Structures are given as C-alpha cells and as structure tokens.
Length: 221
Image 1 (tube, rainbow, N blue to C red):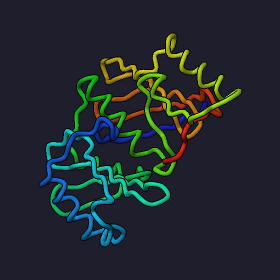
Image 2: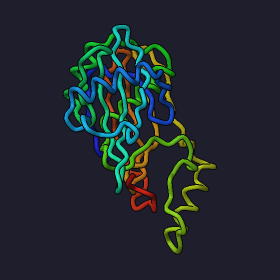
Image 3: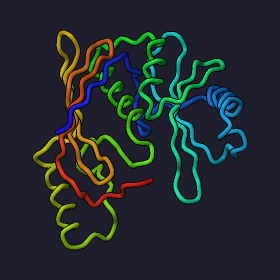
C-alpha cells in the first residue's frame, strides 16, 4: 500500500464521461486563446481536437478543459485551466500549477455531490495522461482486451463476478469537517482502491491499495 498526501484547495469537476457540454461560444473562445498562446496547438486542425469542459463551481470565471488531440497512432491528452479571458495554464500531471490555479477559485465543498465532482477532477488532473486510467462505477466498467483465453479469461470472469459482492461505485460519507471516501480505479493493468479524507476547503489525503495486478485490460489509448 502506498500513501500519498495532497494538500491544497482542489478544483471541482468530473471525468470526461461526466463532463458538461460546452457552448460553441465558450469552446471557440478557449480554442482561440489556446492556439494563440500554445505553440503546440497553433497549426493543428481543430477537427482533430476534442474539447470537454470539466465542471468547476468557481465564482470568478475559472474553467478547466480536457483537450484530446487525435493522432494516427494514439490520442494525446491535455488538461488546462482557463481564466475565461486570456490566460491558460497547463495543469495535467502538474500539482504545483494545479494548486496555484485553484487558490484563485472560490470553491466550497458542501455536499457529497460536490465531493464526488472534486475527486473526479483531482484524479483526472494528477493521473498519467499517457496511461489509460479511470474511476470505476461497477465491475462492468473495466475495459478488458477482446478474445481473452486461458488464465486471462478466467481473471476477467472472476472480476466481473466479484461485482455481485463488491460495490465498485464511489462511496462518500459526509462528516463534520468534510468527507470520507473510497473508490476503485483502473491504472493500466492494475486494479486499485483509493480511499481517504477530504475537507470542505479541498485538503485531501489519499491512500492507494493494490487489489489486482495483471488485469487483462486495454491499458493504453
């Protein structure tokens, strides 16, 4: 079991499949600033980019955007914070930049829904953008490789069956000072359980526990 401590006020948001739909105007504004300020995106055809806005209950206009660049071999993902006007900061896999940005956002986590959104965004930002990693809602969410045989097929069937006894959904309990949480994730070919405590102002302590290694997943984009 490994133990990581992450302290700071954290942006609240959802992973891509739960991200909110951006208006065309917002998407155009963000993309215009991104292409003007980031050389990587300057000459990329916009048709090759997918932009999703992660929910952020910020009262001062800050936004968080997940950008996927579809390339011939595999897509490349980025996460940016946008002040809504002219400043864009890369926060993917960069906790220092992430914390610098979130200190500027007025966020107060009051409900379990707030906490769930927060945890999703926290995980999405700090995870490796080059390895397929995702929070599970059930055992059926595990993306297994096709046409499995032998021990790999047995392990797949065992994990799917375990969903009848193990609740793979995120568990959040509200406490006086914040929240306690636990959830399961896939990181490459590892099934992990993450759990810990989250304060209302975004101070989070996360522990990671290996549940199963060598899961026959599709472990890259």
